[in-house]
Length: 289
Image (cartoon, rainbow, N blue to C red; front, side, top):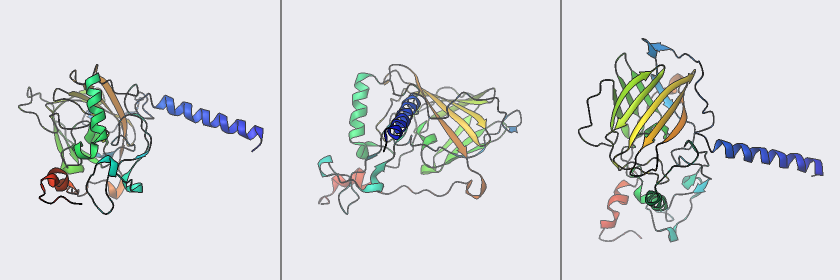
């Protein structure tokens, strides 16, 4: 390669690195402020109904992350093992790289909470509630790899998730504090122009934000904003407030894309793989080799 070509190549790499660094500081590429787009209406409000899905890797880690091998297994086995016996199983255990969807790039953990997050991440295959097929919670349910469907009427909204058959009923009349904590919490909505604002409270402390160990306490409050930004595109933002875990409120933002055609439907999902072994394998009289 001559000197001129080397200079051009180096300039291109610097440009890519610079762009990647800038994008890592903002919630997902394409996260600009909503335009003057006017969505199709259902009555006087935007019609958000349909099957939606993200096109990112936030389910693995909502912060910026490099590709890695994360699945921990023994040869010929489907049970998790200590790190010293880990084997990476190629694409089966791979984590794709991804940009941060966190505003500012990183989550503002309290020092003791950050230590807990790191412990979670190191042992995620035993601790992640998704591994045990528990409900994903909010906001995690909205950026998993599986689609979800919004069903909307003039005065009510239901969100059905393909993962684990999770369901949320979004109400517009505030019933007061949630009577008890639950996996998906209590969702109370109102409209601000063309943006659906949903306040989610009453969630338990057992859900995570992703597979990287990012977690919260039972005092977490989530304020979601659902805004149509173009034909078949919707901006999803969530502000997280949890003084027990974070030093300040923080936000995530992702783009949702609407399914069209014959695949605009939810299909069956069965989550049973590995669960019994992960939860009860230690109780075996004769542990697996």
